[in-house]
Length: 516
Image 1 (cartoon, one colour):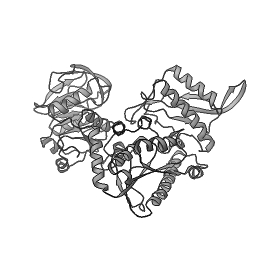
Image 2 (cartoon, rainbow, N blue to C red):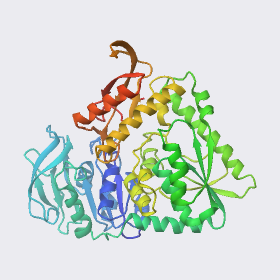
Image 3 (spheres, rainbow, N blue to C red):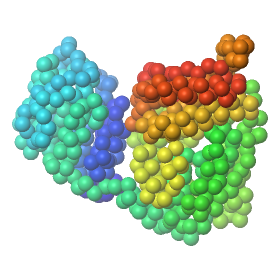
């Protein structure tokens, strides 16, 4: 693993928050990597981590189908910290007792901690986030109980050194008042991890690695208009200069001004050689009559590959291009089940290799990074803030933000409305405080309105502002009423086909961020 003797393995037991744990470790300036619960002792030794964190999970330790974990890992002399289910796994493996007590704790809960290595420097009474039905009722031999709640007799334990420790609650979520302090204390002061990891380290390491891998060969990169592919391309540009050619497929499904942004600002910032493929008609023709969102995704993905293939073959007509750059991120890899044994939550266009007839070797400089880390690298490399801070945008673009058939007219209506929303969010200083605000056209719905003393029969526009850290969970953003009023007024005044603006106030779960 990266940064030998300083990294942390996050063992994933099917946790909702495994990625968030990995992020919190990195926030403590320590490299982290997610691995499956069935990791072997030999694999742990080979990775040579400075510490291990056992994640939460939905199972009961004593259930027949519970994720298996080799308890011998706890005897390797590596510091281990258990969270929720991981805490119970530790207890059971070390001779403690886990019981279905009939009492559950969900949400904010007060713990009463003792002055100990684990809780050094934090209030002994504090609110934490709980989510469990089972409980540790007896700590393993040689372990002291360092926190309790009114319903949980063992809410935290630690051995004499504190290097084997765990908590029943979730320190990685912001709802736990001092969670990050507890994690930081354990990682740095108890487990003695070296806080040397930064995004700058990653940028420098990936540039050096790309130089070594690519050598004097030529390489191509598909730009989408998003921050991930832009930063990946910028890293490779720093590494090999004009050996890189970028391909931008303009499928006509981007938001207003985004295609131009790629063509002008990205090229100006990096000096990269850019080939632009105008494929707008090709995509519209392929999407004609299609309403099913999954069908749309598949068609857009297929046509993108076709367009990119053609451009790539034109560039590589002399047979000299050997490498393809992709902006694959760590969450893409994990959620796609890529090499970690985790569940395949979603397919991703950047994961899973290439079509058989495209004989390129993959270069993925962002494969170990999260989205916010990618942004930091982008800023370090001098990319324009408009590209670096662009709100997350789905690969299929506006094609999946039109409910109904995708047509040129409907795309134009949505672009106009989306631009107004982005302008007003920026003017109000809200574009950094929210995760993103999908703007959705209900193209197959018409609503009665009154405009200019006359009856109208226009389309509704849905605003979906959400706040999130990682998009795995999200809450609807409480935007000021005055801002919402301004957005609604402008859209219904300036976009003639729209006579109603509605606000989505559903969290994730149960709703997704995108509509589709």
